[in-house]
Amino acid sequence: MLLGGLTGSKRNIEKINKLSLKVYTNDLVAPVHEIVFHDVRGSKPESFIVKTAMADLDAWHGRFKTILQKTNAAA
Image (cartoon, rainbow, N blue to C red; front, top):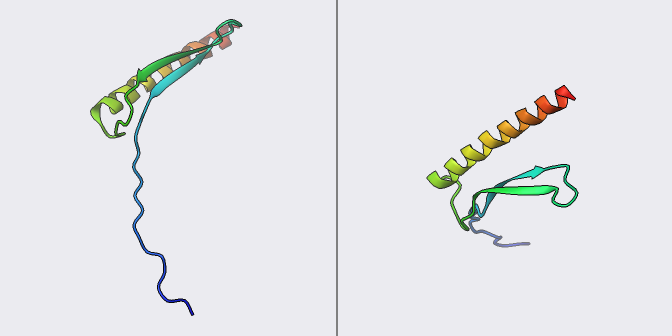
């Protein structure tokens, strides 16, 4: 017979260290370029700075995606 059990609380803390966008090119010397939008260790995801950086990152991701789609359609 087992008496008792494991009890306790679990806590999950999320922190953002860096938000960046990697751009891959056809350059053999430097094929990857990283654009950093946020680089502050331990930032909370709900902070104004992180939310602003995420919005900027999403906007630039959309721009690059559109450029690549138009380039591929023209080829």
